[in-house]
Amino acid sequence: MSLNYEELDFQKTSIGDLMLRRRKMLQLGGIDIYEVKLGEDFLMTSLFHESESQLSILGLAHTDKKELDVVVGGLGLGYTALSALEDPRVKSLVVVEYLAPVIGWHKNHIVPVGRALTEDSRCHLVNADFFELSRDVSKSFDPENPTRKHDAILLDIDHTPTHQLNKTNKHFYTEEGLKELSQHLNPGGVFALWADGSPEKYFTNHLKTVFSCVESHHIQFENPITGGTSEGAVYVARSNFL
Image (cartoon, rainbow, N blue to C red; front, side, top):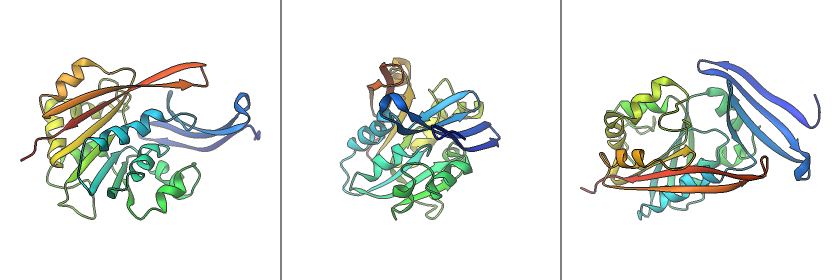
C-alpha cells in the first residue's frame, strides 16, 4: 500500500459499500486527508468541513438557553459533533449514526477527531436509524433517558431534502415527518439541517408550515481540490414557545 494512499476500511452495508480512505495531498504540502464514500457517492472529506461546523454554530446560536441537550443526526467524520461540543453550554450530546463501522472509526481513533469525541464525557455515540427514532414520538433520541426532549437537533445525513441516501428517509421531509421531529424538541427548541448546494426557497417555506421561525444560510468556502469555491446550505428552524 502506498504511503500516499491507504484504504483504512471497506465494508458492505445495507445501503451500499462503505469506504474510508486516507491520502496525502502533495500539492498542499503532503497533509493527510480522510475521505468517505458510500457506493458511488462521495460523502465527506477532512480537507474542508466548514458547512458541517456551521451547522452546529448557526443552529446553537438560535437558542439562548444556558444549558443544552443536543442531538446530532449523522456522525461521519465528526465535525458537526465536535463543533457542538465547543459550545460550553452543551451538557449532553447524543450522536445518532446508522452505520456501525463509522462509530468504530471513532472509537478506534482511526479518524482525526475520534479521540476528541470519544473522550468527552458529554458525548454519546448511538448506533441507530435517526429517521426511525424521529418517527417514534413516544421515546427520546437518548436511549439512556427515554423521556428526555432536546434543545437542539442538528441533522447532516442526506445530500438534500430531495436527494436522500436511502429512499426510506423521504417521509422525514414531509410535513408529517417534520411535525414528528418537532415533538422531540423542548419549547423554543431548534432544528437545523445541512444540505448540499445553495438554500432552496421551497424548503424554507416548507419548514414554516411546522416551525414558528425559519432562516436559511448560504455557506461558501474554498475548495483546494477544484481550486474554486463550494457551497452548502444550513436551514435553522425554531419551535414555538409554550
